[in-house]
Length: 329
Ligand SMILES: [Zn+2]
Image (cartoon, rainbow, N blue to C red; front, side, top):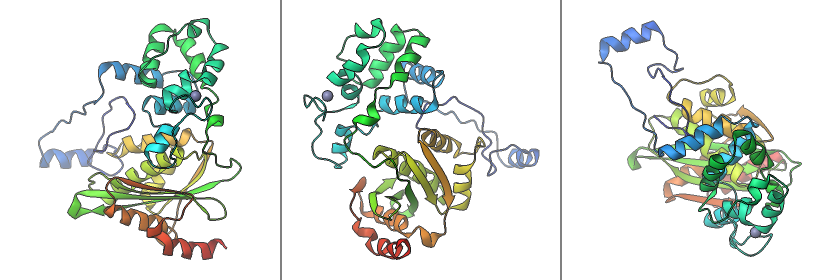
């Protein structure tokens, strides 16, 4: 069963039908076929981290701030260090102070510009020391020293991080994210393809990446959707039309209904990521309108981990891009 990327509370799920809803008929069927098996879902993080997640998700602040904080703790913000690691940019130096690599703890806490923002906040914070190993450690310390109300008002400041980002995308446009998945039975893995284009059909970013072993195409597509959405957020997109071609997956992504199926964890991650966007819409398209993402997912077979293109047409999907451009023009 694919697990959530967030630390969610455990809940009972009925895995023996598609929608995760228990029916007596289905229960009887299972009871006569198999002995009861109990599945323990082990949380991979230690108790300290679990406490931080629980406190974070229970805070009385807007969802998008929780998602931002969670992403900061997980070190998956679009910092220059992370962008350089993914070969999206070459220079990882902080563009504001040019003193240190721009990682999460630097841009949110240690950079002189960030300190300037914190200087106007709680006295307790101004006296707070530096030298934390990362944002998670900083959060843990803040949670220990501040009251819940103080902590809430602190993270609402969230710094003007969005404005500092150096990889800028025009905010006035809506972008279209197409994703697709492929299954490589012989390799015991899957593939993800994603492409982000602006309203004129120009490529903003594309991704071809290996995914884990999956049981079926629905699982592959759901995991691909989460990966593609994380990618879009990483490159700084906040207004997004999400397009996939699997009807049941896109229906589940678009639905507000809490999904109790084995893919429920991943779907909740997707909804959580979507709630952090400024605007988004979800639609299901025909396969013939999703060929670029399809090519990129197929190409992932040749990729060791992941390949990223920024403002450049991905070679493996050149022909499909050309065909799409005829529709755009
Ligand atoms: Zn700096």
